[in-house]
Every structure is written in structure tokens, then in C-alpha cells.
Image (cartoon, rainbow, N blue to C red; front, side):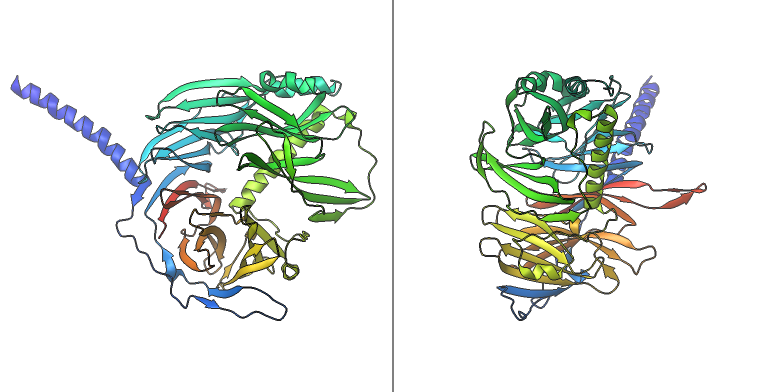
Length: 538
């Protein structure tokens, strides 16, 4: 009897060892902590002073000849192999844990939302896919997350249901709008602090918007996107009255998906809103107005602020277009009542392609970054550069942080801080890379301002000395005086896309997707790996 009991105990011990041992092995494969973290201080002679040329009035001008020896190493890294996929957002929860929202595909363009939660050391706490019913899809480019004070969170996703009946050519405008709203809904997923999915709540856009739009005489609705600002949700899109031009609208919702306010902005026809951000007691709105006259197409920056009731309080829009393009004699006036459902679907598809192209450009897909932009707020010296990218605008100090290059795929770039009030370049840093390097996607660079005034930005770099070339991401940290204080770099890969970064707990958390090209079974495959790397701020 004693022998039999010991045998069962031994058998149970082996089973437990296999289960927990396998789990630990899986985590070790995914999360790796770096035992020795090395930090190389930036040497005084790495960033050298440079002199102003004739007619230049740059307060601080310097040059950096790039060297990898100043790269800081990572604290920890996390790898997840998938067929296809990408992380879209990085969020810090109130208990210090990290939340990543993304998508995972099966290789046949079927994608499911992916939720990944880690502790502040990179240990996986939850990895979960949200199931998707046939002929439905989520807008995973714009997930909205609201956190609570206990470490839980609510995830909001816009869902489109393709199985519902769509409009036909003969349908009146209002019928088309009703059908479109019927196919869209917001799904709310609530997670407690132990990350068990606690509830799912759905609200259709017909219930949310239809009556309010009809009261305002609106009969057509275009694109719709979801954003969250300060624990409030915003629906942003385009609407139109009969025989009139498209105008933007904003709807404010609470956490329970109840409509609080809705307003359309007749003052800004043909304008697409791109962002909404908090601005003291108001919200700051940014967008682009697109119009045409005499065969020339124009794009103008639109900026204005609204109060809590979404009423306009101030306008900061540019008076002149920043971009113009001549395409020949004007076409006849557009008949707004001749829209067909096929045209609407085509526009939606075109918009989706543009969104994906925008996301891919941010994440490293090939594109031509030459532009005909001519922003008068930039100094005259900009005209000698073929491309520039405004990485960040500081509304408090009225300054912009720009990255520029003289020609596509060069090995030189200029980083500037520009004061808009007097068009003064406060500091300008020129990066020179070795001849085997080139900068492929300067328009994808983005940055943010830390609370202490440091500016952080990333820059794609390609090493041509390796067969087929490889991509990596460089990250630079400059202090308020324009001095480089830290430099980081990801490993190099055949492909690198979907780069995101966020400061969490005095660490820089980065996420991206890498992929390789492998010729297997007579065809090319591109296996993806979702990667997270944490760097310490020094």
C-alpha cells in the first residue's frame, strides 16, 4: 500500500514537473532578461560644434558622426513568433504592468485582436486573442484603452459586420447612411486587475448616432474612427447634408458608450480630422483641408480648439496651403446625389489602403519621400532639402522638432528644433553615417517630449554591407540644450515594421515586428516575430 501511494505521488510529481517546466521553458523562449546591462556614456568629442554658414543664424550647430560604440544595451526582450501580426499600442497600467494591443493573422489575411500583458520586468501575464465571427473585422489601427486605478482596463474596438445587407445604387442617401451605421458597432471588453475577461458590451452606431444626425439634416456619413482622450471616447468622421460638401463631425461618449455631445463643423468643409488632444480646459483638433480650383489641388493645415460641449473656442488654422499640385483643367462640378454604394465601398477600400500604407510607411515599407510641400513657417534654408518631417510639435513653447534630408536614401540627416514665433533654429544637429548606411524612411520618424524636457525620437537605418541589406531602428535622446545624452539601437533584420515606443516607469518600451524571407517548398515565406525591447533611461 505504501509502495502504491508513493508511486502515485511520484507520477503526480512528474506530471506537475512537465506542466510547469514546459510553461517555464516557453517563457524563457519568449522573455530574456539581460544579466549585464552596459551603458556607454556619450563622449565629449562625439558631438562636435559646427560653424554657421553665411546667412545662417543657428544658435547651436553641431555634427555627430555615428558610431555603434555608444549604444546602450537592453534591459529585457520578449519575442513571439506568429504567422503575421503587429502590435499597435503600448499602454502602462496603474499597477506598473504593460499592456500591448495588436493583431495576429493566420497568413490568409484573417486577423484577430491580440492582447498581451507583461509585468514591468517583461514577464508574460496574459496572452489572449479575441475571437472574430465570420465576415466581421475589427479596426485594429485605432484601439482605445481606458485604465482604472487598480490595474484593470477597458478595451474599445470598432467592428464592421460585412454580413449585413449593404446599400444598392438606387437607395436614397438616408437609406445608405442607415445601412452603413447598422454595419458598425463598438465592442467594449472589460478586464479586472487579475485580467480575467469580466464583460463584453456592444453598442451599434445606429443607436448612438442616427437620430442626432437626422435631426441636424445629415443624410450621408463617410469614414468613422474611434479615439480616446482623458478617459472619454470620441467618434470622428465626415458627414454631409443633401447637396452640400462634406464636413467633419465629432461625437463624445462616456465609458459606458452613452452619447454626451455631438457637433458638426460647418466652418471646415472638405476637412479630415487627424487628431484630438487635451489642451488646458479644451480639446485641440488638428486636420487637413483638401480642395481644388482651376485644376490645382490644395492641402491646408486646420487647427482649432473646442470646449467640453464641442463648441469652437479658437481657430489656429494656416491661411495658406502647405501643399499644391496641378493636375490639369478642372473636372465638372461633382453631383453629390449620384453616389452609388459601389463608389462608397471603393472609397472605403481606398481609405483602408491609405491607412495601411500610412501605417506601413511608419513601419518601414518602401515609399518615395520626396514632396512638394512648402510650409512657410519653416526657415528658407529648408528649400535646399528635398524632404523634411515634423516629428513633434510642442504647443506650450511653440516649437517643432524636425528631421530632414537632402536626397532620398542618403547617409546624412539634419535634426532641428525650430521656434515658430520668430522662425529661429534653436539648435541643429547633422548626422553623418558611414558610407555603407542609408536612411530609407525619414518620413516615418516620430518623437516625444519627456517631462524633464528631453526629446526622444527614432530613425530607420539600413546597412547595405550585409547581403540583401538589413534594417534596424536607432533611438536618440537629446536634452533641452540640444546635447545627445543617450543612444540606442535594435538588432538588424531583413524586415522591420510597426515600430512603437513609449516611456513607462523610467524605461523606454519599444515594440515592432521583424520578418525574414525564406524559400520553402518552391515559394517564398515571410515568418514574423513580434518583439518587445526595454531600454533604461540614463
